[in-house]
Length: 221
Image 1 (cartoon, helix red, strand yellow):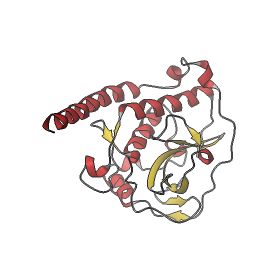
Image 2 (tube, rainbow, N blue to C red; image 1 turned 90 degrees about the vertical axis):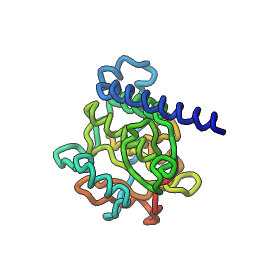
Image 3 (cartoon, rainbow, N blue to C red; image 1 turned 135 degrees about the vertical axis):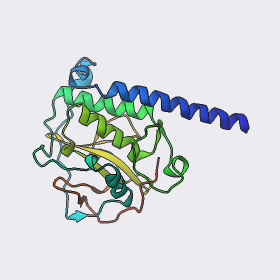
Image 4 (cartoon, rainbow, N blue to C red; image 1 turned 135 degrees about the horizontal axis):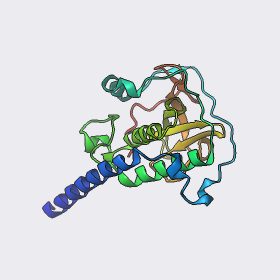
């Protein structure tokens, strides 16, 4: 048992070191790098209908606490577009960031990681759950030149009816979900999730997406 715990800790520390190194490299990842990837991946997805939002919704408590500690990450710049124009190099950037972050962060629950039920934060030590992983993707995509206003943190109910978080990218081809459960970036209709609410486009209030049934926490890995 002691040997197993030591091995798990070594793995976590190793993941943390890899995460920091990868983050440093990904911070400079942009469309120019994405354009050098396989041309097969450069095929844009078929256009789909964007998700329809409803009235204002309150954010999760953990999101509000995250915004208190890092308000610059939650500000909305109304001069930015609400949806980005989807070009092949931009699509490749989205695919690359999604896959790399999924592989470099070890998924753990907030309870195991922080000792609390729900906390939204950056996975600086290489460990994080769904929302931590999506926050890192959002940060890296912004550093790659994508508008923050088109990258919306989103709360869903997953295939098990549990609270889960994805990063919604709003584009000229529709809305797509970056998810730590899969490397494929799917149109929101293809994920099988029940969409609850996401960041709003014009301020700190979130907006409803479909039914107004919301999980208390997004505690899944």
